[in-house]
Amino acid sequence: MTMEHFDVGIVGAGLSGIGAAYHLKTTCPDRTFAIFEGRDAIGGTWDLFRYPGIRSDSDMYTLGYAFKPWTEAKAIADGPSILNYVRETARENDIEKAIRFGHKIKRVGWSTDDTRWTVEAEVAGEIVRYTCNFLFLCGGYYSYDGGYTPDFPGMADFKGRMVHPQQWPTDLDYAGKSVVVIGSGATAVTLVPEMARAASHVTMLQRSPTYVVSRPAEDKMANTLRKWLPAMLAYNIVRARNVLGGMYFFNLARKKPEQVKAGIIKMVQDELGPDYDVATHFTPTYNPWDQRLCLVPDADMFRQIKAGRASVVTDQIETFTATGIRLKSGQELKADIIVSATGLVLEVWNGIEVSVDGTRIDPGQTLGYKGMMYDGVPNLASTFGYTNASWTLKCDLTCEFVCRVLNHMKKTGQRQVMPVNDTGDVASAPWLDFSSGYVQRAMEKWPKQGTRVPWKLDQNYAKDLMNLRYARLDDGVLRFSNPTAKPQQIAA
Image (cartoon, rainbow, N blue to C red; front, side, top):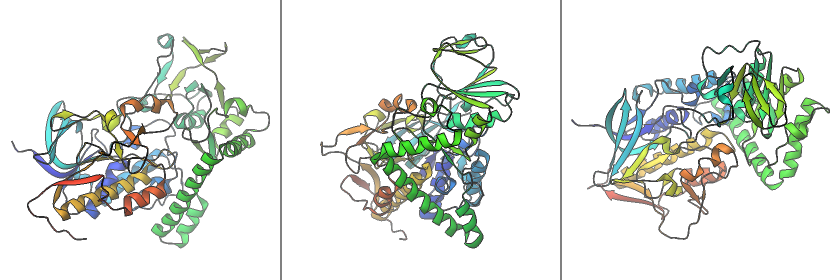
């Protein structure tokens, strides 16, 4: 039986995958594509996570697509609003019909002789095969199968209910209950103020503090501009301001960490008052942006702490008990419900087994090119956003670059493209220079970045804008090969 064939296979129908499909439809309209989605719905993260208060930790003027303005009042948007935005994008651009739901890609194999990938998808327990000329991995960076929960001592003794935010039960009633949220990252600081609205009390239990900054949920400038300017123009003005502001803040944090640290700590102290122990609970030992900062819109978590409905405890767990958690300090936290907001499980290449001409590729032994393609792996790219800015900023640029490559290949009659590291003088470094536990647990298995361009992974939108949108493709590293008999001409 002949396998169904596409010019491009996209993995994932979330924020990145829908964006990739838009770019293909508008920039490479003569190319066929399919989106392989392992679940039964559009939305990725924004459909998977259902915990209370789920929201972005980036503003929607940079988390939103470059081509579709965000027009709602809240700049720090809730999950359902973001999900609606992604699905609306798919619907408006007639992308839905290209999605193959319930197709979990298990393995892919490249054939140089055929210049195509064979894609194996698990569908209702059976393997279905497709082929494509180019593979675009847009399934994110973590496993959808479950989050990370440490093996805490005595967990089996706890008689209450324990949940992980990634697998939030629909029947969980926390009204009037005592809740302990373990963790100090973005998920924890989202859950604590939201659950505190109904719970009798919520305690955020952290081993060590994270930098937490407050920001207005609504952007007054954006909402004002939309009244007087076309939506796209207003969006682009605010987007540019936020991009530049974010870059400035990150660079300041790198150059003057003590100054930035002092400013963040003072903001928290001003919010919580002079008597609150900010030194213990909100003063990390690391510098700002060694880990991602946590955002609280409209100071919601600080307001719940001041009201006595929430509290922060900084300590280590000795053991779970039947009624809660005993800490190493001897303090006991009573809990009806314990939420383990202890991180994600990072997953390289969307958990897909990749082979080239019959040889399986170990991602941990590959070198990444411009943060999206890989030495020794032909006709494959992946989206990976910024750690210090909105995910979509990098993904939009990645999609543009992939479309440039595809159009160049068609124009020149080349069927294969691959970055090649044959100089022997490129040292390797971890893919992410981030001290967060969920990153450190996984980096050994991830591709490496180089110590110089174009192998170096810059966390810098301005540099990437130049390197991905405007830099020449024929840079001596990206090699085009395997020509057709006659180049095909396409419109510029």
